[in-house]
Every structure is written in C-alpha cells, then in structure tokens.
Length: 285
Image (cartoon, rainbow, N blue to C red; front, side):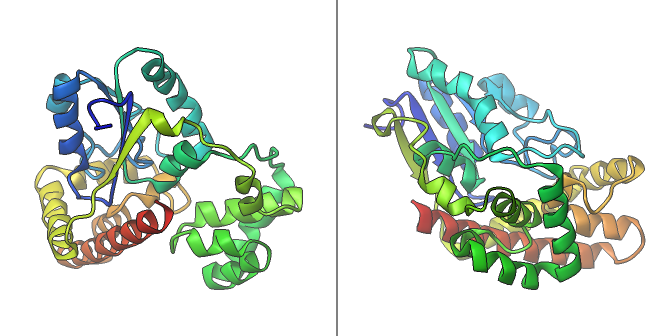
C-alpha cells in the first residue's frame, strides 16, 4: 500500500527535513487534508519561527490543527489526539484522505501504539513534581524519575521539562509508572489503515538546512514575532518557550547577547534537536 492508496499517511521526521513540501505534494495527488503533528506549530503567535505552512500553502490544500493555541496554553499528547480523532475518523470512513505530518514523536506514538488512559492528576501531585524539578534541577530530577520509571527517563529528550514532570506526577498520583500505563494501550488506528514514512536525510545536509532556515526566519520577520511575545510578558515558564530559537532571540532583544551570538546558539540547539529527533524515530519505529 502506497501513501496515495491508504486512508492515512503518517509523515514524520526531524525539523527542516522537508516534511511540509512532501505533504503538499501528497495533497496535490490525492486531494487530501494535511493535519499538523508538530506541537510547536499549534501556537498562533510564531508562524515564522515554527516554519508553519504559509497562507499560499494553505490555499493549495486544507490544513487543520495549525496556529490556534495562545502562548501560555499547554497541550498534552492526549489533547492533540482528541482534536485529531474527528479528522482521522472521517478519513477511515470514506472521507478525504489524511496526511498527519510533523516532528512530535509522541503524537505518532499515540497513533501507532496507543495512548494510556492515565488517571487524572490532582494539583498536589502536579505541584510537587514541578517544585521538585525546580529544587533539584534537571539532572537530579532525572535520577529520581529513573528510580520509578527508567524507560520514560531514557526516552524523554534533554531539557523537556514538561514531559519529565509529567512522567513523575503520574507516578506520584497513581503509584504506577507512566511506562507501565502506556504498556497497557492498544493502537489508535488499525495497522492496515496507514502507511508511515520517516524522512531521514543525510545528517550534514539536514544541519545545513537547519542553519539556512534560521537565517531565512530572521530575514522574514522572526524577531518581530519574538518582540510581540516579549510585549505580552513572555516568561520562561510559558509553554511556547520550547519553540526553537525563541529564548535566544528574546535574549538578544533584551540586550543580553548580540544577534550573531543568538543565531549561533539557535543553530546549535536546532541541530542538536534534529539529531535527537532522528534517534528517537529510529528507536521507536
């Protein structure tokens, strides 16, 4: 079964690997819908900095779940999955084919392997997890999480505070590790309903694309997006701070570093993130 034959086409890969262009080509051949599976492209304030599909792209094919969250809103994988289900159901029941495209691995994991029905987390467990992270720092917090959920600690990427504290608060709430909850799941979509493609360009080519894209973002107004967020009161604990380049360009606009230094730091962080994405997809799929 090819991507144009299946009701669902799961298209994943690291940042700057050409996923959006591939999805547009698929849509032109199938008349299908493109559904966002990039957690940062959910945010409405940073279309340039997250390389969101342009208005011109959106005139060529229907795009859904792009650019609707505000900067202070945190979405879980479960919330994304609930929003995606109506479009998935439509594709599986004879409606337009659907291309799920992005680089957020947990979204694809939820589709292919399932998402656990984890008990609701109360404020006490959530507050303790966050305060422990603040008090211990990431390295020591990871050591603590590893004692209760070594699988989650191993698969969560560096600096992903949200998912580290999430894994720990699940254990605090339920006494059962997040990994154990997830092991009880079943796939969200039938295996014969989709084809999956993971883009894996040569590493040096990918790094060059990452570097070039950040410069293009600056050329097209990325600093204006960051400036507008600062004017809104941008804070380190806002979920949107996970957008690549945002913290570095904000530091530049506050006068803390030069633009050249900010760009170099953002490029390095982006290359590191792309490398971690490739490793994660290779291990999971």
